[in-house]
Amino acid sequence: MYRIALLPCDGIGPEVLNEGLKVLDVAARKFGIKYETIPYDIGGDRYLRTGEVLPDSVMEELRQVDAIFLGAVGHPDVQPGILEHGILLKLRFELDQYVNLRPVKLYPGVETPLKDKGPKDIDFVVVRENTEDMYVGIGGSMKKGTPDEVATQLAVYTRKGTERIIRYAFELARKRAKNNTLTMVDKANVLTYGHDLWTRTFAEVGQEYPDITQEHAFVDACCMWFVKNPEWFDVVVTTNMFGDIITDLGAMIQGGMGVAASGNINPEGISMFEPIHGSAPKHAGLGKACPIAAISAAGMMLDTLGETEAALAIETAIEKALATGTVPATTGPEGSTQRTGDLVASLV
Image (cartoon, rainbow, N blue to C red; front, side, top):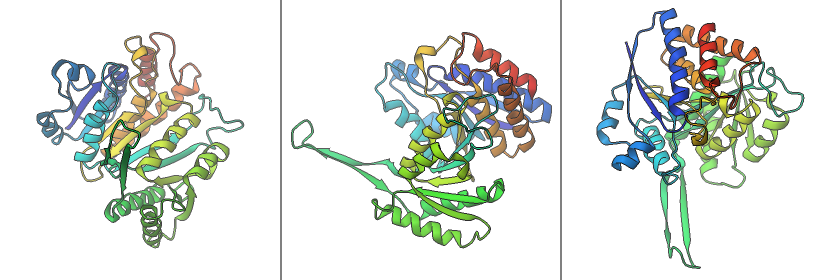
């Protein structure tokens, strides 16, 4: 019996999460998976009502579940950063979800802005380090609000953190068995110290994986090649900051935020799964948001829990639904959110 915490949160989050749960329920019944869901009132409305973001009492409860399924974070009446730091980053750091896993896959029936590229060209995974770099929040300012203001933001990289994410990426490249290629993305020609650690660690760990072709790209070149030659990539491993940037580019070439899912994974602990899109408050309550990313996140959750058959069934159902050409990959007409969920559920 899996215990799954539900964090619908803000905007379109509850709507897309409902469709993910709809498909999850069908897959669970088909494959004999038992689970229970535990909903939590977390997000902008709670913060405005109580001043609480993610109370310690709730955090302790979340440490006892098997997985977390999240909708979207962001409220128009809450200053940017409060919810993101208080919910997303707090969960990632305190639960040590050091892997941010982002499949970049173009499904048949989904348009890409890249000319002459199709599903066979866009099918790779970005492994983003998720608990270090500039996101640790070390820094400060002096003489704020004056012409002499100084601000610092420290990027932190540890050998432990670097090695474990690189090793995870090597193992994933071996497991995917697609092109057996791992590309490390950094900016070692400018960020001399931290990215030197990444370069050396990549080379050292790579000696244990002679079956995996090891490639390297600077982040600016990577952005160009994502657009020009996405077919070059199989598995990509990169730092937290650069991963944040290139995965949004990945979402665009796979057809948009509505089809892009992610996992925040602790391979030895509790992982969290979510669509990468924001809360889109202007669309909230209208049933216009594409729920494919949330449904795909549910599939990723099952796969991480070891329910590979059910996860594959969801992936196949998503492909079939999108191949009909009737599912909008971003926003659609009112009611399309539920209709898309119904369609995918019927195909599991």
